[in-house]
Amino acid sequence: MQLRDRLDQEEMLMTAWSTSPSVEMAAALARCAFDTVTVDMQHGAHTETTAFAAARAIITASKPAILRVPVGRNDLASRALDMGFEAVIAPMINSVQDARAFAAAMKYPPMGERSWGPVKALQMHTSYTPESYFRSANTRTVSLAMIETRAAFAALDGILATDGIDGVFVGPSDLSISWSGGAHVDPHNEELQGVIAEIAQKARKAGKFAAIFAVDPADVPRFGKMGYRLAALNTDPGIIAAGAAVMLEKAKG
Image (cartoon, rainbow, N blue to C red):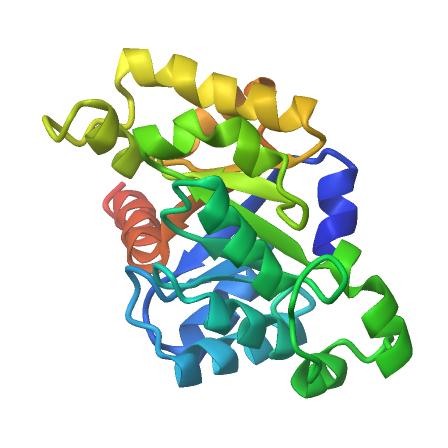
């Protein structure tokens, strides 16, 4: 498992975002220059079957696989690790209680309550024996709590201090909705940029990772300067559309 090592090296990693329930599409993304591929079961169309098949395709392409689970699906977080995903993103973590429940599902005792059974993970990550996987899993797997509401921001210090939470993942669109009291969706709102910067600063101070969905890829260098270490660039339909636009522009001269 390689994602944790690269995050520890403080690289700015780029992840593609797989929403279409297509193993072939996930495999194609993994063969691109992205550092990792995130499979989305919250807003994407993936089922457990397609998500786990996508993980196999991503790992076969020698890329780490990340899963975003639906809201409250901590059981699926544990299952994702058993299937070979290296990281899980949990949406709507709005309190320390939410963070503790998520962390418990992600980590083996004594840190958490994850049940033993990583059969598929051992098949995917062949350098591990059952014993070495067990001894390293709590430090090698990555749990990312989404910060996307005012409540989550208010609880940020406690969330970051929670054992078993390795970092936070900012959802700027939902955060803009919550921050504006439901007035708009504006991830580039000027006031929000200070909040986004503060989240990264607090994560770094706590020794945790900060990740974010970059609505505009041009924002990534700015996020990197803030201290973010992982950025999602676009969804698979968006990547196809962007690529098609470039090809058509070239074809038309």
